[in-house]
Length: 111
Image 1: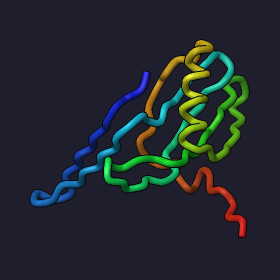
Image 2 (image 1 turned 60 degrees about the vertical axis):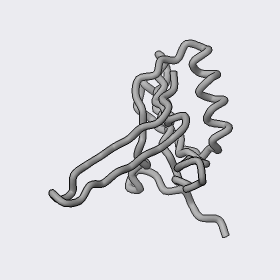
Image 3 (image 1 turned 30 degrees about the horizontal axis):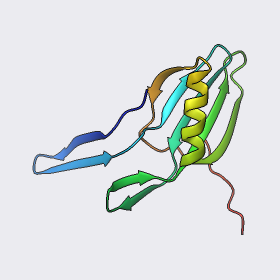
Image 4 (image 1 turned 90 degrees about the vertical axis):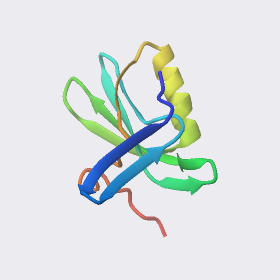
């Protein structure tokens, strides 16, 4: 239920190309009768093996009333939650390969 490696190529100009490659397990949208849970990449980190995501913005939407809850989770927590939700019957209904729009959610900086 995961995707291994996604590539996006968008022509910006006839002589240039925008290439975005992300390796590894991808950021899912999981849906049940009660909730829709989206995981958006929070930060892309360049490593020798490729670009990886260390944290995700998690958005839980309650299907009955549209209320939303937001949090930031680590990659390990996200992987565990994906497995747990799928094992409990959630359906993969989409993939989020771009960051969540800042106009929707921006975590508070603690300093």
